[in-house]
Length: 98
Image (tube, rainbow, N blue to C red):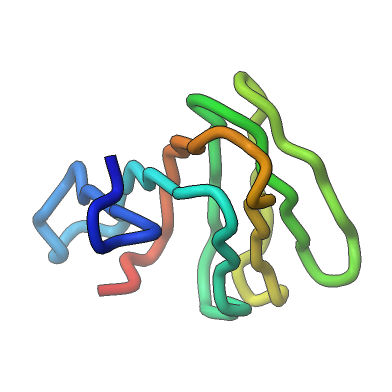
């Protein structure tokens, strides 16, 4: 499922002239994101699996069906434990980061 890639992002709305972007991320076990900080708002929905997520200093455990929304200027990152199954998430980001 992840040959050569630990995270595979699929942009659902490839028109970056819009005011938001929607991405489905498929995340392999044992993966950690960099710390992100940017303008705007982020919304995430767990489509499959379980993910450890931090916004600022506050940790969250997100499971299938859980959602999160936060000001994207706050430092945020995720960790997907090596012992877990692959994760699939939907992200809506405004403004687009690309």
